[in-house]
Image (cartoon, rainbow over all chains, first blue to last red; front, side, top):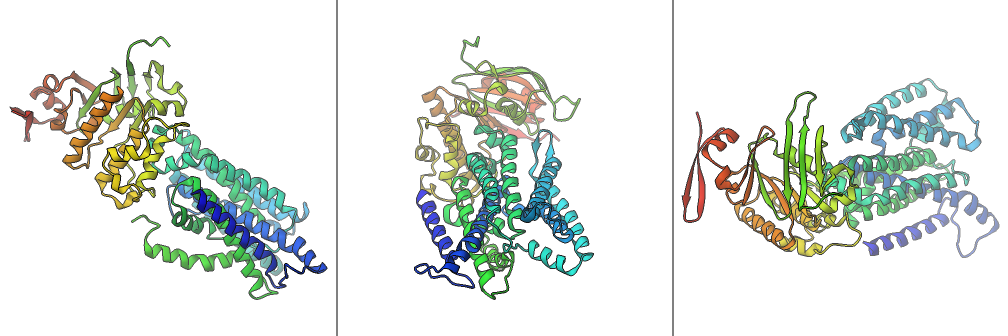
Length: 320
Length: 256
């Protein structure tokens, strides 16, 4: 497991460094001119870092959520957090709020996601613990409601706001800024470390509540901690650059092929894999028909959906 | 802790109900000592599983006390309790993503330093040596159950509460598992309580607790406890107890 994880780290580093030098304006790493340095430091580097952070958060929270809900088809967005984030962000974009500069939209999205998370948690809580099915249904129900309100707002709004809102919904990293990075790092790393510290408990939860009790865990407490870690990672990811689809669903499955289902390896590998995939998707999105940028979320879905269907055909994901 | 004898688990006047006001178990008292191997025998719905879940701390008694080594079971930290007691549910999720080795290895989770058994030994004990790296979903129902049993053995607790561990096992493995548990008990002085519903299998036990509607009808050797009358009361069937050179066995007949 250690060797595979180390290889994955090396692979990720290579991809990230490569991504810095490729783009609509390729940069020769052996010969960096003045303007190149500017592009590298103030545009490419923050963008690569943000895409990696987002991807890490989504990949890891997908791996955790699929275990907590004991459902291989769960995606962090199914909890409705992303819909809550999208609703708040789009309200901010369309009404042109700028009370906190470039931070306004991410902050609104973060608040939207966290509030939704707390609400879904409250709905899924009964008799002193989370009930996975209730969580799932509460998330789906709330997600539908928020999407409907979102559509309503978008239907009634003007063209320019609408375009930017649409971009955001599909995962738009073009607004990234160095200022986002410390805040994204704090929340995503906090969630990641929290879930890693509970990786054994997550394995036990996959066996069911009674066995995790027998193995020395409190299923209720572990689910609460893991839900908080998912909330932190998903909320921070969505707020950084919108709703990038498929990473949270897909990456944990690829991770299981490579390293197996043990959460102690799967969580870090899913974080790395998510970071790499989103970084590549964003690279493609900003280069392929430059100067027009495609939202990274569209690229991940175009790469992700066929692969997902392929997995479905192989029937591995349903364990039959 | 004011605990001197070798009682591992004790029920004191335990009451429990699944629905409010509808007592399922009332004033249940018994104790289990080190070295005992007890068959908890009863029909479906008699309360065997409920008793094991109360004993393992999964369910909380509505009144009375469940004590582990003299202390209320809920006063233990989860991890500490897991070193003293392990519980294997009757219904096991067979559709989990782990390999045999990964599943069995979870038996070590309560420990920072591994106890006497290691993963390979535990897997060998249940006869899955060839399937160490096989995903559980590729095994038969009986093999999967044995993998779970290996995990429970690896956990190394002094008290095993096993809910129908023989269900879905071939008769060969039923007998082997019983032998394995007996050996284990002899070597390590542990106590085992096993729920079962097969009366013939119960005859193999040294000690039986016969259960009906959350009450103990009797505790003792099968010869004493399993009579025509007690079996009629517990199972609603007429039986004939026969004996041959191998020991006693039952003939069932259906009451019309």
